[in-house]
Length: 324
Image (cartoon, rainbow, N blue to C red; front, side, top):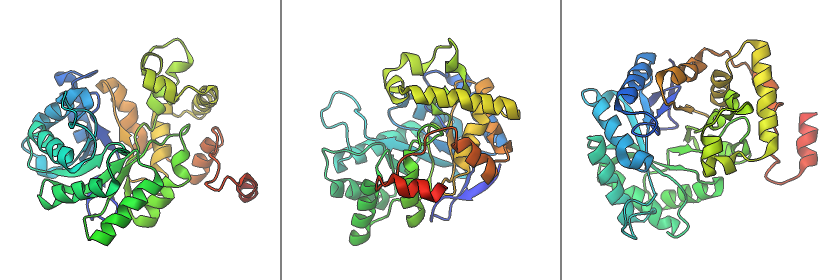
């Protein structure tokens, strides 16, 4: 497992980040522990969780697993989602962010988060308030690096501008969705991150399992049982692209999950794709992504199997001319 610098932080992280969304949900504590051991043995030192994952159980399980070697790890968590019945126990206000961080630290059994993501953009809270909230938890020593997830490029850039004017700690990491059938990030988010020297850890590199090929048959799973994922990957062309992709991988002797993750990781703006699994058997293919020789030509061939998003200007003629 190689390491890469995380943006401009000077911190070295493994080329894969392990996401613990399944901890306490699809994966019980014993299974979570087995997966944790496997990823640590593989060389991963970078872990991602969130207060909303399994209603806090993900953080609790991860917290127990990291005891004794916490300082060797880079731990990221997120806040924004509703936490209990209190009307103010949500969002990215200073009030909620401080309380959410304190609760996450307690569940994780640690005195600081290496990275705190604002999980989504909060349209009900002024962005100045949200950036001040990040400054507050950094100044208090509870968070080292501020970050955002699921923010657009303009939202992130505006946050950076506010932080620069105010001399506050800057956003150092973003977490966008990015995979072979979800490429909107290529248009503005990834270029913005590169221009600002921001670390990028994309989630869902295998498109919630779509690129594994299992949904091309009769298999069930979250794309068929979870309305959010069903809507996210509802376009017919995505399934058509996945079918072509799986056939391509079979012809080349490539594992579709390993290859999908390697494709995301090979983008020059990407620091580390986030991998996840429900069990150790499923985890193996994700860890094997580092064995894929993702050459520029192979990456380009794979990209041809899906739709290239239109440019930000919508001037398709210029995009087509550049590709000719």
